[in-house]
Length: 144
Image (cartoon, rainbow, N blue to C red):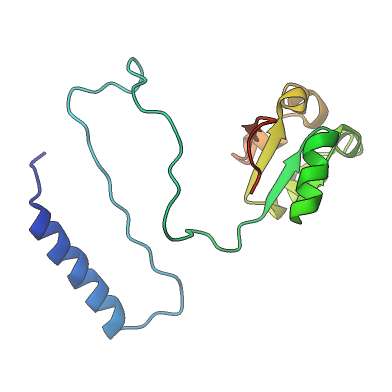
C-alpha cells in the first residue's frame, strides 16, 4: 500500500461529488473509505477503543429497541424508543418466526447489563443469526 497525498484524496472526493450532482439517482449514495494500518494486529493489540460521534447522521430513520430492566425501559419510554423487558421477551417462547420478525423490525438493539446474559436463554439464537445481538448499555450511559 502506498501513502495517498491529502490534496489527491480531496480532488478524488470532489470528482465523486460532482459526478453525483450530474447524474441524480433515486437512492442515497454513500462513499466507503478503508484504511490499512501497518504493523498492527487487531487480534493482539487492542489500542483503539471508543465511540466517535459523526457530524452527519448515517441512518436518520434508524430504529432501535431497548431490551432492559425497569430503569432502562423507563428511560427509553421517555425518549420515545421502543422497549421490552424480560417478561416481554418471555412471550416469544423461542418461536423462531416471531423472533425473526422482531429482529427485522429494528436496525439495532441495546440491552441492560442484567438482561444481556439472559437473552440467549430467552430468545435462542435468533438475534445472533440475524447479526443483531444487542450492544451493552450501562446504567450511567445516556440512551439518546
